Image (cartoon, rainbow, N blue to C red):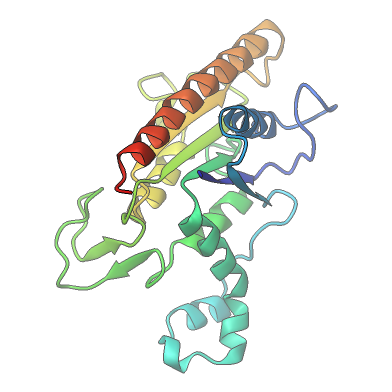
Amino acid sequence: MTRLLHLDASPRPGRAGSHDHGSHTRRLTHHFVSRWRTLEPDAEVVYRDIGANPPPLTSVEWIEAEFTPTEQKTEAMKAVLAESDALVDEVIQADILVLGAPLYNFGPPAAFKAWIDNIVRIGRTVDFDMQYGAHPFMPLESYMPLLADRKRHAVLLSSRGGYDFDPGRSMAAFNHLEPGARTALQFIGIGGFHSIAIEHQEEGGEALAASTQSALERIDRLVEQLHREFATSRLTQPA
């Protein structure tokens, strides 16, 4: 059974195409999860709406609690980290992270950045020790990703007001959403990263419709690709 973590970061409550002023990224994440369930009805899906309920921002209390040795943490410190611990648990347990996050002012929404800051945790998702060599996913010494114990994938589904923000396009250097998310997730050991986006949101009309249709079709292909990969992996595992 595959475990999916379905996360929405858009503050818009509805889905484009189904609700007035609905979110394009919510439409994409819903489409991915729905398509996956048609192929694997018993897949486990954990849903978290950080657009409606943002994770806590990093505070001095959070930093003190995080970097206090486990055996010295007070009950108050444990309470400060409780939501972060729950977010980390969801990521650890997931096989696929389905992440919906629009591009806001060339970067992620604040809620999505707060989620990243809550799941990159020393001793939980990444470790540091001078004895470690090179990081397996990036050229960093002394860091060990703790989520590299098995294959995990992250699928970042985004929407953009403008266009040509994909790698190799004219606005790629202004896109700080996908590169930042990829770096953080690979840092903790999530080796598979995929991104699909809707563009032309400000222009609207036929350009937006065509971009939306293209994104939905690419999601369909990605779902089939990842489902085959996980099905093959299960077949090759020892009994």
